[in-house]
Image 1 (cartoon, rainbow, N blue to C red):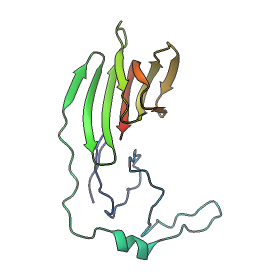
Image 2 (image 1 turned 180 degrees about the vertical axis):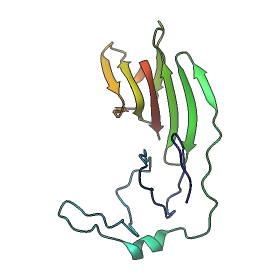
Image 3 (image 1 turned 90 degrees about the horizontal axis):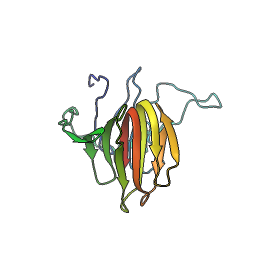
Length: 170
């Protein structure tokens, strides 16, 4: 059991048996997969009012049951660019996650975001709001809870506002 607080980040490798305690709202980033094996499900029910299926044998077959140290918080290092601070949170062979702290309120220059050819980027707005200015000058408004998918090779975008994002890429 790990005591958690707001803005904690944990990397839980695939195959690690884990559960999320009551009262926690999380953003779970994972490799592209529709597979979850349940060992226990807190007696939750589905839309047909049936208990959700457990997968005990399959889960145990792929579970890493070796004792592990409790997950720790990563070293927090901020990189500053005009209007934005970026904090690297996690990288594995499937994805990378960064936190963006945006504040362009009252500034003439906006924060820039580049998308190259290697990966899409997904921006999950954790707090605040603003808009994204596309290269063709089209504006896309966003607010807390919005997830914005930016295809690879989109080019240069400008972020405007005061907000906090998770930026996910492959």
